[in-house]
Amino acid sequence: MIKEAVVLAAGLSTRMRGFTNLPKQVLKILDKPLIYYPLTALVINGVKKVYVVVNKVTYGPIRKILGGVPIDIEYVINDKPDRDNGYSVILGGSYVKGDYFYLAMSDHIFSIDIPKVLAHYVGIADLVVGADSEPKLIDIEEATKILVKGGNIVKVGKGLDEFTHIDIGIFIMNRKVVNYFKECSEVKYVIKLADLINYSIMKGVKAVVADVKGRFWFDIDTKEDLEKVRSELRDYVENVKGFINYLVKA
Image (cartoon, helix red, strand yellow):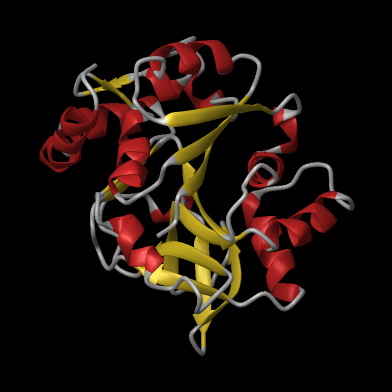
């Protein structure tokens, strides 16, 4: 069982500007902070230690909102958030002690059983990307796409014309893959997670998808996403929220 996770919360939330001055991770979704949703899914599936990567702006509000949560949390400060989410992955991954860890986005909500779908591939591949071959609820144009051939990931990126799956924002990685990520960061300043994955594949890392096949997941980037998840997706979210009530009173 995987006992460590890195959760990324150092983004600049530029698409929320003008709507709120708060980090989107602390915004309420059916009266629970957004960041509670991915954290709960991880903890319910056996995670004991979480490294939350924040920036200097998000650190205070996120630490406050997580103050009463019964989870072992360590905060990792990203003082260069302009280097993008790949840099946050490297920072957080450098703290991991075990062989494998989960990586999750703090602004995604997903079904509680999804981490278990990924865990099936531990030992089969060093990099497992949670993916959906049957996405129903998101804008494909905005999504990160994945091309799989022969059972292995060939390439990931938002601009792919040919693709088989959509990235859902949760991963499992072998800790040694972080070394390849660090190599990539030495030749590029702005590094997206997709860049790191593509670089590690080029270096020979076996990367596969764990296909959730239409299970519920949703990525919150904009005010419109926030409104959608509070209204027409409410029933999906209520199912996940029930586990939050089990884990913590907030």
